[in-house]
Amino acid sequence: MKLYRTELDEGLSKKLFDIDANQFLSDELNFYENTIKCELSAERSSNGYYVSSILKIPFEQTCDKCLTNFHDLRTTKYNFLLTDYNELLQDDSEGVLYFSQNDNEIDLNPLFREFIFLEKQIKSICREDCQGLCPNCGTNLNEGNCACSFETKDNPWDALKKLKGN
Image (cartoon, rainbow, N blue to C red):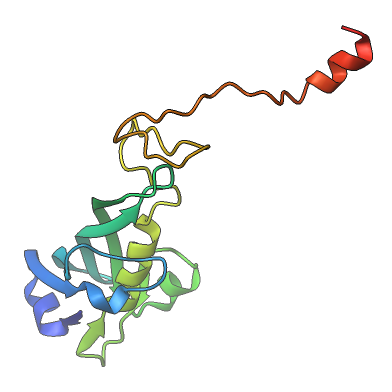
């Protein structure tokens, strides 16, 4: 997604963009819709352009407990500054991007790629009360019970009981 200097100079107020989600597809990222919704606001500041964004990311996740696919719409806000002031760029501040006075446009896709990866959850659970899979037969316990008995015949402490003589 490109932002043009003319748009930034005029100022943006909650302008809506559709970002093609397919450009971010990878082994780690899947989406249940083809677009990521983005709302941008921008205003000129003494150092450049202050931009605030709201991303609505339609993740397609796989539950780590029951292995079912589910939809996870994540809404996140990020703010950043577009500038060419060396003092701001050299202090390694997050959210400060180089935007030269000579450039007429800036591609925000690399930045949004980072935002999207930051929102991807490490542990994905389809719902708070997910029961997961039966460790014996693999039945999804969210969909029903299985006939497995959860009594363990091999208790790892049994060997110690034999040593004590009990």
